[in-house]
Length: 311
Image 1 (cartoon, one colour):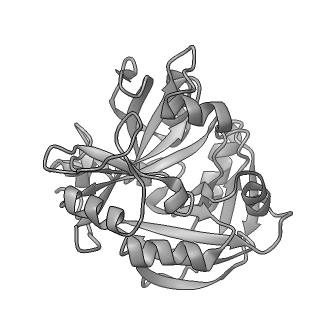
Image 2 (tube, rainbow, N blue to C red; image 1 turned 180 degrees about the horizontal axis):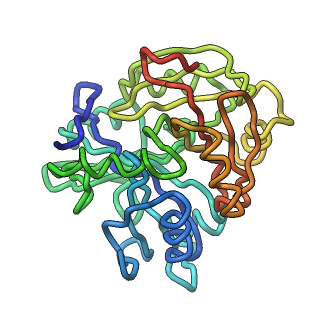
């Protein structure tokens, strides 16, 4: 059966269509995800796709119920284009998230009325969204630093919208990483209250829980935004990994979190593939971002859903 998708807000923010991971070599990062994470590539299998308006290469792959878009600017990098500009500043790093929206023009007008700058593909202001609007990007300056692509379409060939998804999803549970599900994406911020206001009031995210996350050494709140949990975290100590990231980059996407069945198996598998990890609690490990292309990736046995036992 197809993946059951939850939606939030008046305009139907639903499936998180992808997380974009920026790099300089799409085949290299794609092979890493295939070999280490059991990634299932469904677009750009033999060679990356190219999009002229953004002057970039990309492929799409699944890791459990998470879709990752591996992206790189076309060389030589054109820093006047949004993709090239991002890579020039940040290098290998998590880039953004994307959501399918039922009423895309309606959401665009809501954001514009709330004072959010909305950019069209390739750059420039989107002033008159209509039925022909395929996708757009609210400015990260107005979304607490998180780059968000909002689109009216699923990704072409997305396995989650196929009737065979429930069978395919089982593959990751028997993989040595023992991934049960994608738990959340973390946004590191300087001011938690301000960021939460953006997502609860403007984007109509649903607050679920808040408190102190000892693993991140941060105050946090978790919201449901569409079909994904978004954890917004303000570091308590600038010397922590999250603290250093926020001090360097400001408000920005920070990490990915997966729930696994067997932490020992996941740790051993990563070690065999030269991915260094650090155990930060009895139930959680985190990768060394130098081995995961600039992206800290957390694996935990904690259940972070509404009724789970995780913080």
